[in-house]
Length: 210
Image 1 (cartoon, one colour):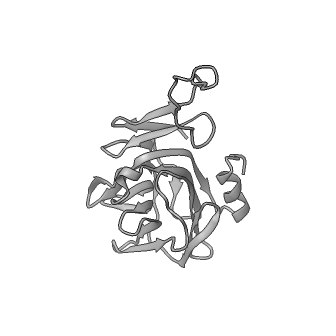
Image 2 (cartoon, one colour):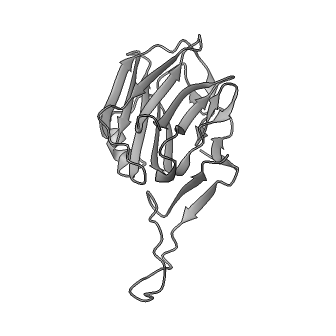
Image 3 (tube, one colour):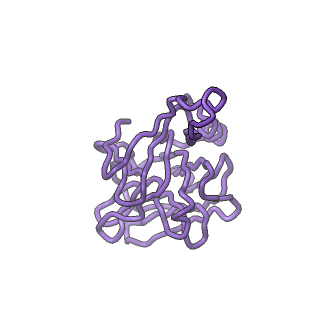
């Protein structure tokens, strides 16, 4: 899934150039979330977006990503992934600055929002977390996984059907863009259908073949 970058979004790559054993003066560098690199967003207009529709919300779908929220911005809402609509987001997975927990927010055909808060999940800024939002059309159910566990679930029938793209690091808010993420994102996955709990765990471990 190709992504187009906006703002100052960049890819960080660990080139293993710093070896404290060989050079005591080299400054340690942050480790990538998964693999050799990740997407860096500064919370000030940065984002990445898929070109063209990638999700059919008229059927079951699953969204997943690894995220590390910057602790300096821990008191404000920040979107990790969202499905854009005309005026707002059809669905979004975000960090809540008010509760300092992860949540999924869905908007029905009447513009009413339903929020699922991951009540028992740890959402510590500066730590790596894996998030998956799963919509099961047959069961009329939304599930939010945090770090491999189902942390929130609810019966839900969205009432909308749209083929849409995906936004990384921002969401539609009152007809504009907002809730920009200050942090890093890695291993963004979009799947048609319902991921099983085992498949979510594979993605959390960085195993893309599910």
